[in-house]
Length: 148
Length: 148
Image 1 (cartoon, rainbow over the protein chains, first blue to last red):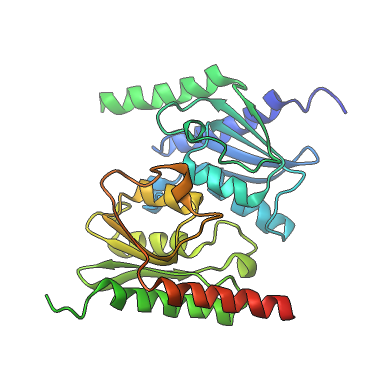
Image 2: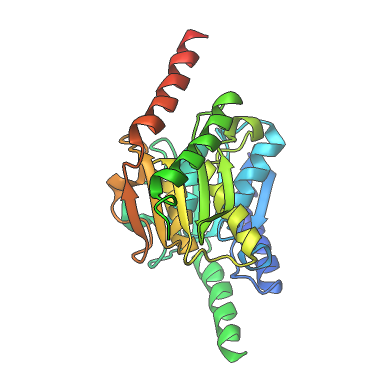
């Protein structure tokens, strides 16, 4: 397999999803689900537009991927997300049995990490991929928010 | 306010939602969201029908209630659910800032409780309401499942 399909390659695509959230005035988090190097689900944060706290990027990417494959378990799939998942999304990822989760920026305040192992024990976790770029998008959003 | 609107009264209505899941061959969990003694959202587990691990009863009740009131926060609302919420649903309830969560049967294996305080610190939690009835519905489901 070519090196082109690296975690950074797919994180860039998750970042592109995050940019869509940014452009829509949403907290900019993006996620994609990849199987066999193909995107089978994607999503960006839509909590404001949908008035729905459950409309996180990961939740939508999980639902879209399951819909695409016609099955609810995301075995042999990888979820890329620009920000460390929250407890809700970690819980959803647990149920999905996704094989690998790759996230960019850490979320010390709302990330799942401080609550222990909430993901499935079979799920491989990779953190810090393009963390600076992922973090910058969030910082820029909140900077603009403070200025409005 | 009349005693008629007790936690048990509303849990019976959540159980009726759970029965719908049972009848549809889904793990029988039901949830409702109540504001001012009126149901503003309800849901039952649909993970099999929708092929979606995120389609828990609470998630759908939260989304429905937020849609009903046109706002994403469920302040001054109570969520009734027949089974102790999982980590995913506890995370969603945290984000919703729901004022009170009432659940029936405990879920020692998948309940959020063992992970510490995942709900919002302002959320009041009541457990064990009609626990036997809620548990019986689940036991009956898994008993039938083993026989098929």
